[in-house]
Image (cartoon, rainbow, N blue to C red; front, side, top):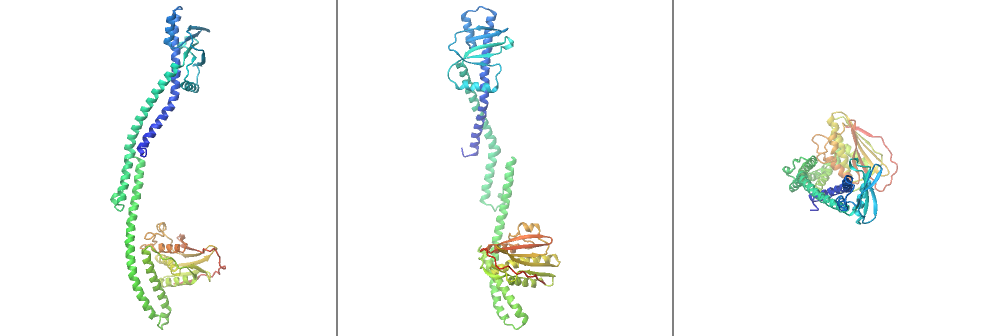
Length: 475
Protein backbone atom coordinates (compact mmCIF):
# COMPACT_ATOMS: atom_id res chain seq x y z
CA UNK A 1 0.00 0.00 0.00
CA UNK A 2 2.73 2.47 0.99
CA UNK A 3 4.81 1.65 -2.10
CA UNK A 4 1.97 2.15 -4.56
CA UNK A 5 1.12 5.51 -6.07
CA UNK A 6 -2.54 5.18 -5.09
CA UNK A 7 -1.71 4.39 -1.44
CA UNK A 8 0.65 7.32 -1.10
CA UNK A 9 -1.88 9.57 -2.79
CA UNK A 10 -4.57 8.64 -0.24
CA UNK A 11 -2.22 9.15 2.71
CA UNK A 12 -0.91 12.48 1.46
CA UNK A 13 -4.42 13.73 0.71
CA UNK A 14 -5.55 12.83 4.24
CA UNK A 15 -2.53 14.54 5.77
CA UNK A 16 -3.00 17.71 3.72
CA UNK A 17 -6.71 17.92 4.52
CA UNK A 18 -5.99 17.43 8.24
CA UNK A 19 -3.30 20.10 8.06
CA UNK A 20 -5.79 22.49 6.45
CA UNK A 21 -8.32 21.69 9.18
CA UNK A 22 -5.73 22.39 11.88
CA UNK A 23 -5.03 25.77 10.33
CA UNK A 24 -8.77 26.42 10.37
CA UNK A 25 -9.15 25.06 13.92
CA UNK A 26 -7.05 27.75 15.63
CA UNK A 27 -9.09 30.80 14.53
CA UNK A 28 -12.25 28.71 14.83
CA UNK A 29 -11.66 27.91 18.52
CA UNK A 30 -10.83 31.57 19.15
CA UNK A 31 -14.14 32.58 17.58
CA UNK A 32 -15.97 29.96 19.67
CA UNK A 33 -14.49 31.42 22.89
CA UNK A 34 -15.52 34.91 21.86
CA UNK A 35 -19.07 33.78 21.07
CA UNK A 36 -19.24 31.90 24.39
CA UNK A 37 -18.33 35.00 26.40
CA UNK A 38 -20.63 37.26 24.39
CA UNK A 39 -23.44 34.77 25.02
CA UNK A 40 -22.79 34.98 28.74
CA UNK A 41 -22.91 38.78 28.56
CA UNK A 42 -26.25 38.68 26.75
CA UNK A 43 -27.68 36.21 29.27
CA UNK A 44 -26.50 38.36 32.15
CA UNK A 45 -28.08 41.43 30.55
CA UNK A 46 -31.41 39.60 30.17
CA UNK A 47 -31.23 38.46 33.82
CA UNK A 48 -30.61 42.03 34.93
CA UNK A 49 -33.76 43.18 33.14
CA UNK A 50 -35.82 41.38 35.79
CA UNK A 51 -34.30 43.58 38.47
CA UNK A 52 -34.94 46.69 36.40
CA UNK A 53 -38.58 45.71 36.15
CA UNK A 54 -38.86 45.04 39.88
CA UNK A 55 -36.34 46.58 42.27
CA UNK A 56 -37.10 43.96 44.90
CA UNK A 57 -36.52 40.28 44.05
CA UNK A 58 -35.84 37.55 46.54
CA UNK A 59 -32.56 35.74 46.93
CA UNK A 60 -33.75 32.51 45.37
CA UNK A 61 -34.86 34.24 42.17
CA UNK A 62 -31.59 36.17 41.98
CA UNK A 63 -29.58 32.97 42.41
CA UNK A 64 -31.67 31.27 39.73
CA UNK A 65 -31.11 34.18 37.33
CA UNK A 66 -27.34 34.08 37.93
CA UNK A 67 -27.23 30.30 37.50
CA UNK A 68 -29.16 30.44 34.23
CA UNK A 69 -26.82 33.14 32.99
CA UNK A 70 -23.78 31.09 34.10
CA UNK A 71 -22.20 34.04 35.98
CA UNK A 72 -21.54 35.19 39.57
CA UNK A 73 -22.09 38.95 39.31
CA UNK A 74 -23.62 41.37 36.84
CA UNK A 75 -22.63 45.04 36.76
CA UNK A 76 -24.43 47.43 34.40
CA UNK A 77 -23.27 50.98 33.75
CA UNK A 78 -26.08 53.30 32.72
CA UNK A 79 -26.02 57.08 32.64
CA UNK A 80 -22.42 57.21 33.95
CA UNK A 81 -23.55 55.23 36.99
CA UNK A 82 -22.03 51.79 37.69
CA UNK A 83 -24.68 49.60 39.29
CA UNK A 84 -24.34 46.07 40.68
CA UNK A 85 -27.45 44.42 39.31
CA UNK A 86 -27.04 40.81 40.47
CA UNK A 87 -24.46 39.42 42.85
CA UNK A 88 -23.44 36.20 44.53
CA UNK A 89 -20.45 35.03 46.51
CA UNK A 90 -17.28 34.45 44.46
CA UNK A 91 -15.56 31.08 45.07
CA UNK A 92 -12.13 32.73 44.61
CA UNK A 93 -10.66 36.12 43.71
CA UNK A 94 -10.85 37.40 40.15
CA UNK A 95 -7.63 36.47 38.36
CA UNK A 96 -7.95 38.23 35.00
CA UNK A 97 -10.12 40.74 33.14
CA UNK A 98 -11.07 40.50 29.43
CA UNK A 99 -12.58 43.42 27.51
CA UNK A 100 -14.54 42.09 24.52
CA UNK A 101 -15.30 45.50 23.04
CA UNK A 102 -12.10 46.01 21.10
CA UNK A 103 -10.05 42.83 20.58
CA UNK A 104 -7.99 42.02 17.51
CA UNK A 105 -7.73 38.58 15.92
CA UNK A 106 -4.22 37.99 17.28
CA UNK A 107 -5.33 38.76 20.85
CA UNK A 108 -8.38 36.51 20.57
CA UNK A 109 -6.29 33.60 19.20
CA UNK A 110 -3.67 34.05 21.91
CA UNK A 111 -6.23 34.13 24.75
CA UNK A 112 -8.11 31.13 23.29
CA UNK A 113 -4.97 28.97 23.04
CA UNK A 114 -3.94 29.99 26.55
CA UNK A 115 -7.35 28.99 27.96
CA UNK A 116 -7.39 25.78 25.89
CA UNK A 117 -4.04 24.69 27.33
CA UNK A 118 -4.53 25.90 30.96
CA UNK A 119 -6.28 23.30 33.12
CA UNK A 120 -6.78 25.20 36.40
CA UNK A 121 -10.17 26.74 37.18
CA UNK A 122 -10.20 30.55 37.52
CA UNK A 123 -12.69 33.34 38.05
CA UNK A 124 -12.44 35.99 35.37
CA UNK A 125 -14.13 39.34 34.67
CA UNK A 126 -15.58 39.89 31.21
CA UNK A 127 -16.49 43.37 29.97
CA UNK A 128 -18.66 44.02 26.93
CA UNK A 129 -21.13 46.41 25.35
CA UNK A 130 -24.83 45.80 26.17
CA UNK A 131 -27.02 44.79 23.27
CA UNK A 132 -29.47 47.35 21.80
CA UNK A 133 -27.56 50.18 23.57
CA UNK A 134 -29.07 49.23 26.95
CA UNK A 135 -26.21 50.96 28.76
CA UNK A 136 -22.58 51.95 28.45
CA UNK A 137 -21.11 48.60 29.40
CA UNK A 138 -21.83 45.37 31.17
CA UNK A 139 -19.49 43.38 33.39
CA UNK A 140 -19.79 39.79 34.53
CA UNK A 141 -17.70 37.37 36.53
CA UNK A 142 -17.57 33.71 35.57
CA UNK A 143 -15.61 30.48 35.99
CA UNK A 144 -13.26 29.19 33.27
CA UNK A 145 -13.88 25.44 33.70
CA UNK A 146 -17.23 25.46 31.84
CA UNK A 147 -15.64 27.61 29.12
CA UNK A 148 -12.68 25.23 28.69
CA UNK A 149 -14.96 22.17 28.72
CA UNK A 150 -17.11 23.74 26.00
CA UNK A 151 -13.98 24.58 23.97
CA UNK A 152 -12.67 21.00 24.26
CA UNK A 153 -16.04 19.60 23.23
CA UNK A 154 -16.14 21.96 20.25
CA UNK A 155 -12.55 21.04 19.32
CA UNK A 156 -13.33 17.31 19.40
CA UNK A 157 -16.32 17.83 17.13
CA UNK A 158 -14.19 19.88 14.74
CA UNK A 159 -11.52 17.15 14.65
CA UNK A 160 -14.08 14.43 14.03
CA UNK A 161 -15.61 16.48 11.24
CA UNK A 162 -12.14 17.10 9.79
CA UNK A 163 -11.36 13.40 9.83
CA UNK A 164 -14.63 12.59 8.06
CA UNK A 165 -14.02 15.32 5.48
CA UNK A 166 -10.44 14.16 4.86
CA UNK A 167 -11.48 10.52 4.44
CA UNK A 168 -14.30 11.39 2.07
CA UNK A 169 -12.07 13.81 0.12
CA UNK A 170 -9.22 11.29 -0.07
CA UNK A 171 -11.58 8.57 -1.24
CA UNK A 172 -13.12 10.74 -3.95
CA UNK A 173 -9.69 11.95 -5.04
CA UNK A 174 -8.39 8.38 -5.11
CA UNK A 175 -11.28 7.24 -7.29
CA UNK A 176 -10.83 10.21 -9.60
CA UNK A 177 -7.06 9.74 -9.88
CA UNK A 178 -7.52 6.01 -10.38
CA UNK A 179 -9.80 6.63 -13.33
CA UNK A 180 -7.89 9.57 -14.83
CA UNK A 181 -4.27 8.70 -14.04
CA UNK A 182 -3.54 5.31 -12.46
CA UNK A 183 -5.52 3.21 -14.92
CA UNK A 184 -3.98 4.91 -18.01
CA UNK A 185 -0.49 4.54 -16.48
CA UNK A 186 -1.07 0.83 -15.97
CA UNK A 187 -2.23 0.69 -19.58
CA UNK A 188 1.01 2.32 -20.75
CA UNK A 189 3.04 -0.11 -18.62
CA UNK A 190 1.12 -2.98 -20.18
CA UNK A 191 1.88 -1.66 -23.66
CA UNK A 192 5.58 -1.38 -22.78
CA UNK A 193 5.69 -4.96 -21.49
CA UNK A 194 3.87 -6.20 -24.58
CA UNK A 195 6.26 -4.29 -26.86
CA UNK A 196 9.32 -5.53 -24.95
CA UNK A 197 8.27 -9.13 -25.66
CA UNK A 198 8.71 -8.58 -29.43
CA UNK A 199 10.13 -5.13 -30.30
CA UNK A 200 10.56 -6.06 -33.96
CA UNK A 201 6.76 -6.40 -34.35
CA UNK A 202 5.41 -3.02 -35.47
CA UNK A 203 1.89 -4.07 -34.47
CA UNK A 204 2.89 -3.80 -30.81
CA UNK A 205 3.79 -0.11 -31.03
CA UNK A 206 1.53 1.90 -28.74
CA UNK A 207 -1.28 3.99 -30.21
CA UNK A 208 -1.87 7.18 -28.14
CA UNK A 209 -5.38 7.19 -26.70
CA UNK A 210 -5.20 9.06 -23.35
CA UNK A 211 -7.48 12.05 -22.87
CA UNK A 212 -5.21 13.68 -20.29
CA UNK A 213 -2.78 16.00 -22.08
CA UNK A 214 0.32 14.99 -20.11
CA UNK A 215 -0.38 11.27 -20.49
CA UNK A 216 -1.04 11.66 -24.19
CA UNK A 217 2.28 13.48 -24.60
CA UNK A 218 3.98 10.59 -22.79
CA UNK A 219 2.26 8.07 -25.04
CA UNK A 220 3.25 10.01 -28.16
CA UNK A 221 6.87 10.17 -26.96
CA UNK A 222 6.77 6.43 -26.26
CA UNK A 223 5.29 5.81 -29.70
CA UNK A 224 8.14 7.75 -31.32
CA UNK A 225 10.71 5.89 -29.24
CA UNK A 226 9.24 2.48 -30.07
CA UNK A 227 8.98 3.35 -33.78
CA UNK A 228 12.63 4.45 -33.92
CA UNK A 229 13.72 1.38 -31.97
CA UNK A 230 11.80 -0.98 -34.25
CA UNK A 231 13.35 0.66 -37.32
CA UNK A 232 16.80 0.49 -35.71
CA UNK A 233 16.36 -3.21 -34.95
CA UNK A 234 15.28 -3.86 -38.53
CA UNK A 235 18.26 -1.88 -39.78
CA UNK A 236 20.49 -3.89 -37.46
CA UNK A 237 19.16 -7.14 -38.87
CA UNK A 238 19.69 -5.92 -42.42
CA UNK A 239 23.24 -4.81 -41.56
CA UNK A 240 23.94 -8.18 -39.96
CA UNK A 241 22.71 -9.98 -43.08
CA UNK A 242 24.67 -7.60 -45.30
CA UNK A 243 27.78 -8.11 -43.19
CA UNK A 244 27.45 -11.84 -43.56
CA UNK A 245 27.09 -11.49 -47.32
CA UNK A 246 30.04 -9.09 -47.59
CA UNK A 247 32.19 -11.45 -45.55
CA UNK A 248 31.39 -14.32 -47.93
CA UNK A 249 32.06 -12.14 -50.99
CA UNK A 250 35.31 -10.84 -49.50
CA UNK A 251 36.41 -14.39 -48.76
CA UNK A 252 35.92 -15.47 -52.36
CA UNK A 253 37.33 -12.22 -53.74
CA UNK A 254 40.43 -12.64 -51.63
CA UNK A 255 41.03 -16.03 -53.21
CA UNK A 256 40.59 -14.56 -56.71
CA UNK A 257 42.97 -11.66 -55.96
CA UNK A 258 45.51 -14.06 -54.51
CA UNK A 259 45.52 -15.88 -57.80
CA UNK A 260 45.91 -12.54 -59.62
CA UNK A 261 48.95 -11.82 -57.47
CA UNK A 262 50.65 -14.90 -58.91
CA UNK A 263 50.18 -13.61 -62.46
CA UNK A 264 51.75 -10.23 -61.62
CA UNK A 265 55.02 -11.99 -60.88
CA UNK A 266 55.33 -12.89 -64.58
CA UNK A 267 54.18 -9.44 -65.69
CA UNK A 268 57.07 -7.89 -63.75
CA UNK A 269 59.51 -9.92 -65.90
CA UNK A 270 58.29 -8.23 -69.09
CA UNK A 271 60.82 -6.07 -71.01
CA UNK A 272 58.14 -3.58 -72.09
CA UNK A 273 59.00 -0.17 -70.47
CA UNK A 274 55.33 0.70 -69.97
CA UNK A 275 54.64 -2.65 -68.36
CA UNK A 276 57.70 -2.30 -66.13
CA UNK A 277 56.49 1.13 -65.01
CA UNK A 278 52.90 0.07 -64.38
CA UNK A 279 53.54 -3.42 -62.96
CA UNK A 280 54.61 -2.25 -59.45
CA UNK A 281 51.47 -0.13 -59.19
CA UNK A 282 49.36 -3.10 -60.28
CA UNK A 283 51.06 -5.29 -57.71
CA UNK A 284 50.52 -2.69 -55.02
CA UNK A 285 46.85 -2.30 -55.93
CA UNK A 286 46.22 -6.04 -55.85
CA UNK A 287 48.08 -6.35 -52.54
CA UNK A 288 45.96 -3.63 -51.02
CA UNK A 289 42.82 -5.28 -52.39
CA UNK A 290 43.82 -8.51 -50.67
CA UNK A 291 44.46 -6.66 -47.44
CA UNK A 292 41.11 -4.91 -47.79
CA UNK A 293 39.33 -8.25 -48.17
CA UNK A 294 41.11 -9.59 -45.10
CA UNK A 295 40.19 -6.45 -43.14
CA UNK A 296 36.58 -6.76 -44.31
CA UNK A 297 36.48 -10.32 -43.02
CA UNK A 298 37.89 -9.14 -39.70
CA UNK A 299 35.40 -6.26 -39.61
CA UNK A 300 32.57 -8.75 -40.16
CA UNK A 301 33.74 -10.42 -36.98
CA UNK A 302 33.75 -7.02 -35.19
CA UNK A 303 37.53 -7.34 -34.96
CA UNK A 304 39.03 -4.42 -36.89
CA UNK A 305 42.80 -5.16 -36.87
CA UNK A 306 44.89 -2.86 -34.73
CA UNK A 307 47.23 -0.58 -36.72
CA UNK A 308 50.88 -1.50 -37.05
CA UNK A 309 52.43 1.87 -36.31
CA UNK A 310 55.64 2.91 -38.04
CA UNK A 311 57.30 6.16 -39.02
CA UNK A 312 56.64 6.71 -42.73
CA UNK A 313 57.28 9.57 -45.19
CA UNK A 314 53.94 11.24 -45.78
CA UNK A 315 54.79 12.68 -49.20
CA UNK A 316 55.49 9.27 -50.75
CA UNK A 317 52.24 7.83 -49.47
CA UNK A 318 50.18 10.82 -50.67
CA UNK A 319 51.87 10.75 -54.09
CA UNK A 320 50.99 7.08 -54.44
CA UNK A 321 47.33 7.75 -53.62
CA UNK A 322 47.21 10.70 -56.04
CA UNK A 323 48.79 8.65 -58.83
CA UNK A 324 46.08 6.00 -58.42
CA UNK A 325 43.30 8.56 -58.43
CA UNK A 326 44.82 10.41 -61.42
CA UNK A 327 44.43 7.27 -63.47
CA UNK A 328 40.72 7.14 -62.59
CA UNK A 329 40.13 10.75 -63.70
CA UNK A 330 40.59 10.03 -67.41
CA UNK A 331 40.01 13.06 -69.66
CA UNK A 332 38.19 15.09 -67.02
CA UNK A 333 39.74 18.49 -66.24
CA UNK A 334 40.91 17.95 -62.67
CA UNK A 335 44.20 18.75 -60.93
CA UNK A 336 45.82 17.36 -57.79
CA UNK A 337 48.11 19.28 -55.43
CA UNK A 338 50.38 18.05 -52.65
CA UNK A 339 51.42 20.65 -50.09
CA UNK A 340 53.45 18.65 -47.56
CA UNK A 341 56.85 19.62 -46.09
CA UNK A 342 59.77 17.63 -47.48
CA UNK A 343 60.91 15.05 -44.98
CA UNK A 344 57.70 15.14 -42.94
CA UNK A 345 57.12 11.74 -41.38
CA UNK A 346 54.11 10.56 -39.42
CA UNK A 347 53.53 7.62 -37.12
CA UNK A 348 50.81 5.48 -38.71
CA UNK A 349 49.94 2.17 -40.31
CA UNK A 350 50.84 2.61 -44.02
CA UNK A 351 48.02 0.42 -45.33
CA UNK A 352 45.34 1.93 -43.12
CA UNK A 353 46.44 5.53 -43.73
CA UNK A 354 46.47 4.79 -47.47
CA UNK A 355 42.87 3.56 -47.23
CA UNK A 356 41.84 6.68 -45.32
CA UNK A 357 43.43 9.09 -47.81
CA UNK A 358 42.18 7.05 -50.77
CA UNK A 359 38.60 7.19 -49.46
CA UNK A 360 38.74 10.95 -48.88
CA UNK A 361 40.37 11.77 -52.24
CA UNK A 362 38.07 9.37 -54.09
CA UNK A 363 34.99 11.00 -52.52
CA UNK A 364 36.30 14.43 -53.52
CA UNK A 365 37.01 13.25 -57.09
CA UNK A 366 33.53 11.76 -57.46
CA UNK A 367 31.93 14.95 -56.14
CA UNK A 368 33.85 17.07 -58.66
CA UNK A 369 33.08 14.73 -61.57
CA UNK A 370 29.38 14.83 -60.64
CA UNK A 371 29.36 18.64 -61.06
CA UNK A 372 30.87 18.45 -64.56
CA UNK A 373 33.09 21.48 -63.88
CA UNK A 374 36.91 21.55 -63.52
CA UNK A 375 38.27 21.43 -60.00
CA UNK A 376 41.23 20.77 -57.75
CA UNK A 377 41.98 18.40 -54.88
CA UNK A 378 44.74 19.35 -52.46
CA UNK A 379 46.40 17.36 -49.68
CA UNK A 380 48.02 19.57 -47.05
CA UNK A 381 50.24 18.34 -44.23
CA UNK A 382 51.75 20.12 -41.22
CA UNK A 383 52.54 19.44 -37.56
CA UNK A 384 52.63 21.14 -34.19
CA UNK A 385 53.81 20.19 -30.71
CA UNK A 386 50.91 17.80 -30.14
CA UNK A 387 50.02 16.16 -33.44
CA UNK A 388 50.43 15.70 -37.17
CA UNK A 389 47.68 17.22 -39.31
CA UNK A 390 46.57 16.15 -42.79
CA UNK A 391 43.87 18.05 -44.69
CA UNK A 392 42.11 16.92 -47.87
CA UNK A 393 40.60 19.97 -49.58
CA UNK A 394 38.51 20.10 -52.77
CA UNK A 395 36.77 22.84 -54.74
CA UNK A 396 33.57 20.83 -55.09
CA UNK A 397 29.98 21.86 -54.37
CA UNK A 398 30.09 21.03 -50.65
CA UNK A 399 28.17 18.44 -48.67
CA UNK A 400 24.36 18.58 -48.44
CA UNK A 401 22.87 19.15 -45.00
CA UNK A 402 21.33 15.66 -44.86
CA UNK A 403 24.73 14.04 -45.46
CA UNK A 404 26.32 16.13 -42.71
CA UNK A 405 23.83 14.85 -40.10
CA UNK A 406 25.03 11.22 -40.40
CA UNK A 407 28.41 11.79 -42.03
CA UNK A 408 30.30 8.93 -40.36
CA UNK A 409 27.34 6.53 -40.00
CA UNK A 410 27.40 3.46 -42.28
CA UNK A 411 24.64 3.36 -44.92
CA UNK A 412 23.36 6.78 -43.82
CA UNK A 413 26.16 9.25 -44.49
CA UNK A 414 26.45 8.91 -48.25
CA UNK A 415 27.03 12.32 -49.83
CA UNK A 416 26.14 11.25 -53.39
CA UNK A 417 23.22 9.33 -54.81
CA UNK A 418 23.85 5.61 -54.55
CA UNK A 419 26.66 6.06 -52.03
CA UNK A 420 26.65 3.83 -48.97
CA UNK A 421 28.65 6.08 -46.67
CA UNK A 422 30.91 3.17 -45.75
CA UNK A 423 34.09 4.94 -46.90
CA UNK A 424 33.89 7.74 -44.36
CA UNK A 425 32.70 5.38 -41.61
CA UNK A 426 35.64 3.03 -42.18
CA UNK A 427 38.08 5.93 -42.45
CA UNK A 428 36.89 7.43 -39.17
CA UNK A 429 37.25 4.06 -37.44
CA UNK A 430 40.77 3.55 -38.83
CA UNK A 431 41.90 7.01 -37.70
CA UNK A 432 40.34 6.39 -34.28
CA UNK A 433 42.44 3.22 -34.05
CA UNK A 434 45.50 5.47 -34.33
CA UNK A 435 44.23 7.51 -31.38
CA UNK A 436 43.37 10.35 -33.74
CA UNK A 437 40.29 12.00 -35.17
CA UNK A 438 38.75 12.52 -38.60
CA UNK A 439 36.50 15.56 -38.78
CA UNK A 440 34.70 17.69 -41.33
CA UNK A 441 36.58 20.96 -40.95
CA UNK A 442 34.38 23.01 -43.27
CA UNK A 443 32.06 22.69 -46.24
CA UNK A 444 30.33 25.23 -48.46
CA UNK A 445 29.58 26.00 -52.09
CA UNK A 446 33.30 26.84 -52.50
CA UNK A 447 34.51 23.40 -51.40
CA UNK A 448 35.01 20.91 -48.57
CA UNK A 449 37.87 20.19 -46.17
CA UNK A 450 38.37 17.02 -44.11
CA UNK A 451 40.98 17.14 -41.34
CA UNK A 452 42.94 14.18 -39.95
CA UNK A 453 44.68 14.57 -36.59
CA UNK A 454 47.28 11.97 -35.59
CA UNK A 455 48.61 12.56 -32.05
CA UNK A 456 52.32 12.36 -31.42
CA UNK A 457 51.81 10.94 -27.96
CA UNK A 458 55.26 11.79 -26.63
CA UNK A 459 54.77 15.53 -27.10
CA UNK A 460 58.13 16.03 -28.86
CA UNK A 461 58.54 18.34 -31.82
CA UNK A 462 60.79 17.44 -34.70
CA UNK A 463 62.87 19.95 -36.59
CA UNK A 464 60.87 22.75 -38.14
CA UNK A 465 59.44 21.32 -41.36
CA UNK A 466 60.49 22.71 -44.69
CA UNK A 467 57.44 23.88 -46.57
CA UNK A 468 57.42 23.19 -50.27
CA UNK A 469 55.17 24.54 -52.98
CA UNK A 470 52.17 22.46 -53.91
CA UNK A 471 52.77 19.89 -56.63
CA UNK A 472 50.01 20.36 -59.14
CA UNK A 473 49.24 18.21 -62.10
CA UNK A 474 46.23 18.04 -64.30
CA UNK A 475 44.70 14.63 -64.64
